Amino acid sequence: MKYLVTGGAGFIGTNFTRRLAAEADAEIVVLDKLTYAGRRENLADLESSGRIRFFEGDICDPAAAALAMAGADIVVNFAAETHVDRSIDDPSGFVRTDVEGVRVLLEEFRRTAGSLFLQISTDEVYGSVEKGRSREGDPLRPRSPYSASKAGGELLAMSYFTTWGVPVIVTRASNNYGPWQYPEKLIPLFVTNAMEGKDLPLYGDGLNKRDWLFVDDHCSALSAVIGKGRPGSVYNIGSGEEQTNIEVTTSILDLVGADRELIRPVSDRPGHDRRYALDTGLILGELGWRPSVGFREGLARTVKWYEENRAWWEEIKSGRFGEYYRRMYSARLAASGGRD
Ligand code: NAD
Ligand code: DAU
Image (cartoon, rainbow, N blue to C red; front, side):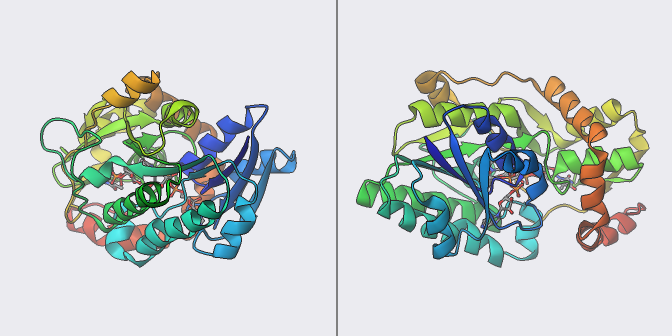
């Protein structure tokens, strides 16, 4: 089976590509633009051993898409701009990659005889869910430029199934965490800041809730969807491990062995979604998938990975990330008596 994995040098794409590479019959091509979030070195061993072929390119570029997709049976589209705060700072790249890039890939896929186009989407498309759990048929109410762009991308993908019978499946996963996550997101930012003895900028009252999914469990769910999912379907993927941000933060500090004084409440993210929660009955019932890593174990494994891979994140944090961090956090930290 020949796979094209787009965005394979990012967080989930790296974990998924490494899992796929363990399957003997998988022929793998990775297409990645290597934005600030893409790290080719994550896959360097697989590339140098010839286990994968790596193309540096943009999913919005039809020529790059055609080259990378040649002969692919299955396309798994992880490529996206993914950080909500950056989408609030400047939505343009989000609309381009997360909507237009999906169209370019779908147009190319429509010309090929591929068996599956898997569009990786997010639980954020449901919007903020104060009570209950979102089901696949619920209305989409995205509230940030990121989630609105992801909703556009997945709706476009499904329109290719409806209009032309293109075999498309959409998955909507909850908040992932684990190895190789870029340190702008809550868990890797707070783990690495705690290791450096820096303040942890907690937004608002810290009571927003997320459903935390260990990345290996997300990848095993995607394998189940690829193996047995029905084209034209949407599958929620979540763990049911709901935690407030303050609970996540104190667990991190305990695991790192850092002082709770590092917690620094700062002004909130505009339009901050209060809660995401998924009903995962469909994937459990239809595909028999269930998560296997609990939050405590997953978080401990994640902290250990960041402890053992300091060079990976220290290089990121010492580069362009510093400028981003100061722009996003300096004033907010200073206003609450903290420092960056
Ligand atoms: P990430 O930001 O770590 O990685 C994104 C990757 O896409 C990077 O390697 C980047 O270089 C690449 N990319 C960006 N624009 C591109 C373009 N125009 N052409 C080619 N490559 C491009 O993201 P992630 O957290 O690994 O998320 C992967 C996918 O999963 C995204 O589609 C995201 O919306 C979705 N998702 C993420 C989460 C989560 O919690 N991280 C949860 C649900 C869904
Ligand atoms: O739910 C799935 C989504 O999860 C994915 O689609 C996105 O790509 C991914 O980025 C993630 O979105 P969130 O906005 O939920 O993740 P983030 O790590 O940015 O924030 C998690 C929570 O932590 C959120 O309530 C905001 C809060 N937060 C975040 C940061 C970066 C803070 O309090 N302080 C911070 O510095």
